[in-house]
View 1 (cartoon, rainbow, N blue to C red):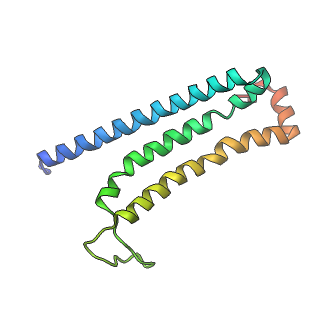
View 2: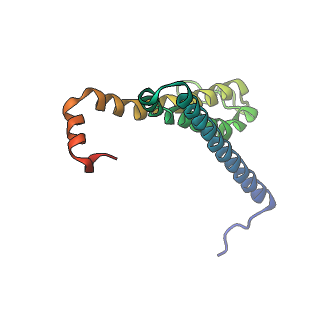
View 3: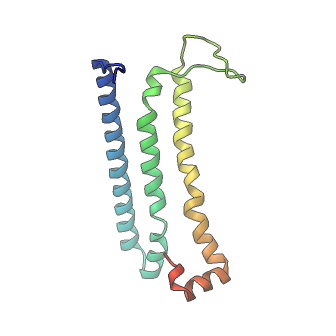
Length: 148
């Protein structure tokens, strides 16, 4: 193989990316676990049996939102320091060679917020369907193989 040789700057960039990914993953998982265990403990100590069981169904949502959003922010936050190019509607760079930290910050925060919003249907539509659609609920009760 006569391809390009790895330089020390390539190795440094790879190490930095690996470090960022490890930090991002570790913090996201730790925060999700803290939220999940904290909320579960709160619900179990402050609500009665059946009410607690109903509420426990929804604890995965805030845990997943925290993990996903934190992961996204950590991975994308370096863009805030370097800035983002300013583009017009035709995607042409209006200030070639210049970047905007404010635009990058807005982009990072928008992406992070969208991570939270995009998870809502996954967590809330199935329970609502199962609670409101009686024939489907009855079918699932009768056929235990269909229940996850």
